[in-house]
Length: 424
Image (cartoon, rainbow, N blue to C red; front, side, top):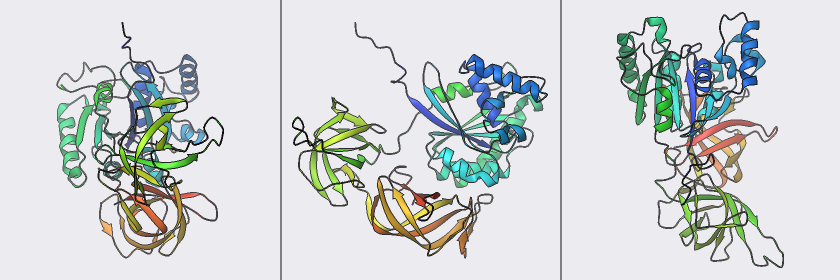
């Protein structure tokens, strides 16, 4: 009989990010998820218990499971992006616990850039705040279509349904500008565990799923499925040995769609058409390769292709090819960005030089207003700019494909990453 057991490697992976106002309980909620799902090692729990006692806490502080930096533990806030990994029998998860402070907006952008779902926390006592709007807007900007709004600390408002319903209505009211495809509202108490992993006996009026049930069942949407094959060439494999004398493989990671043996493809920006003759992973021959898999592709024709080129489906939607790119950017660096500044631009596997032609407007992430007449961008600013590159880029809009629709800015003097952009 064929074994149909799902192995750990075969399980789906959901990436999600947490965000919210300071002290809304993000780290506590993640700690509760890890604790109640039995995803904490015994020595980790002992360390948290010891740290809780040393801080004078009367009970175990589950937030300490994610606040890893000494400065975070001392201040009781999240500064860096803390990544945590856990699994249930149904799914694997990667959590990005991101900071709530406005001065760490760039950290939230980093944590949310690969997420499938955004978990937005709202303190039931305070309701929708400016940072709720900011973080929801950034999640929308980064193409996250699934949002779970957790109204936390329901125990502190006597588990009143009216409080939850008002916050739900307020959130729907402010999200009209950037409303994602799917919003899920869950009343929780991260500290006590209500509706986190187990159903709450204190909120019998709530008929929806727990947070864990939602995380285990929410659809995982792949950004590149609609536009077909996207395969940035990273490396040319030429063994130059007697055994593989004529072997030429194009190695890379599938950034969209499904590569299949026999597919008609086009190599851009050159525009040469050919077919896929073989797909290999190490020594294993594959019939297909899916988004996220790193493989080597052989082509029927010996064409001129190299690192930075993009292999796409010949019969699918084609990407744009241009040296002028309009994009939304989040600036990471203390040194301001100004029109006329030059940077190294990294897009998929291609690097080129680029110059900022214009700063079209800056987005006020608190009010969502567009501020024009801006002559520079400071750290954590989000804006729309126009970029001119030395060589053509082959790209999609970010909303269609996160990989081919994003790029990063690198300082040519320090080689430090100073900004990240989402192509419009």
